[in-house]
Image 1 (cartoon, rainbow, N blue to C red):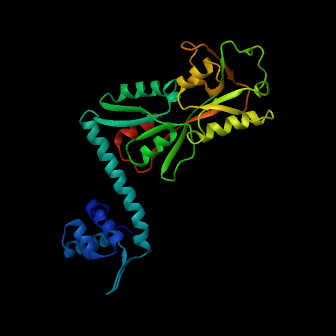
Image 2 (image 1 turned 180 degrees about the horizontal axis):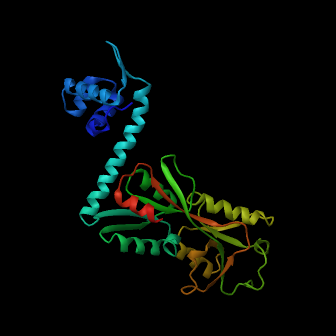
Image 3 (image 1 turned 135 degrees about the vertical axis):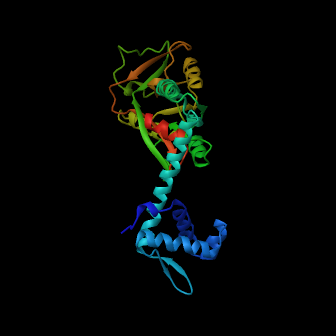
Length: 295
C-alpha cells in the first residue's frame, strides 16, 4: 500500500525505469549522470513510499520482483500522461503553437479531409499543417519513420505499431467514356462489363481496393481484364476519356467537369470503400492528440 502519494516523485519513477531496463546500478547511474549511491537512495525512497520492495537483490545481480514488473507498466503510463499533459499545457500557454504532418491519398482530399482541417484550424489557429499526397505504402513508411504524424489511406493492413481508425465509408463509382452505350438507365449489373478492359489502382498500392474490385466482378462470373494501372485520379480519367478502358473509383474522386467521361455510382452493390486514419502508437505530438479528438 502506498504510504503517502504526496511523496511519490516523478524523478524517482524515471530512475526506476532506467534501472528496471538495465538491471545494473552502475550502468543505470551512468545513463542518468548521477552517482550509484544517489540512485540507490532514490530507489530505496521509492520502495519506502510504495510500501513494497521492487527488486530482488543478490551479490551477483538485480532482478525485478512481481511488484517491480507491475510498476514498470504503470510508471510508463504515468510518465507518458504527464509528458502529454505538460505538452498540451505548454501549447495552450503559448497560444497552441505546433505542427501536424499529414499524409493522404488523393480521394481523401476530395471530400472528407478539407472540412476536418478547416474545423481544426478554427479551434487551433496556431497549429501549422503540412499536407502531402502519398500512396498507402508511402504513408506507412512515413509514419514508421515519424516523418508523418497521421495518414489517411485506403488500406487496413498495417504493422502492429500503427493505430488504425475507420473514418469514412462510401460507394464506388463506375467511370465510363462519355460515348459509352451504358448509362444510369441501362446499367443493371457488372456482368454487362465482362468484356471491357479495366484501369485499376495497382494491387501493391491498394490491396483492399483491388480485392474489392476483383470480388465485385467475380460475383458476376468474370475476372477483370486489366489494361492499365495508375494511382492518380487524373491519369485514370484521361485514360478512360481516350477509350483505353473503364475504371472503378471511390465516389468522392469523381470529376464530371474536366473530362469527357461519365460516372455511375454503384449504390446497389455490397462493397464499399473505406478511408482509414493511421498514426504510430506512442506519438506524443500534442497537436496529434488534439486532431484525434476531432476525428
